[in-house]
Length: 118
Image (cartoon, rainbow, N blue to C red; front, side):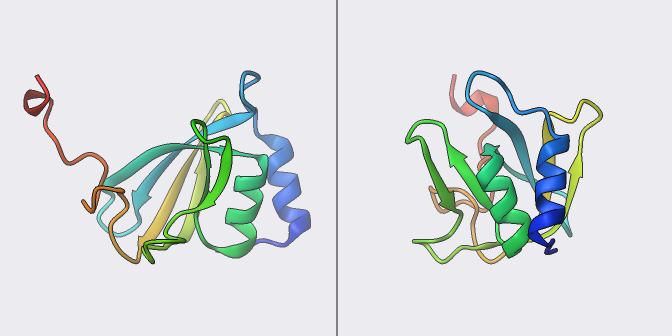
């Protein structure tokens, strides 16, 4: 999936970014298995870079920094499609994973059952 810069700007203008940090929630899902890989945030720049390059970009709320997922690990996430929720304040990003999504090396960030952390 790749949009022109004009289409990307139009999409970004439609979204309702949260006022506190100018982000939207980004749920990342494997396009084939539908497994949820991660929940993260995108600011306007991350959204535009994602839809114009075809690679998942996110906004780190802790580091206050834009990042290309997989830039250092090589585990890029190729964007297949993006869906917008009914309130226009969250996105569902369907990706073709080129490796694990989680920084721990697990395929998904959701690899633990609740009982494992009690």
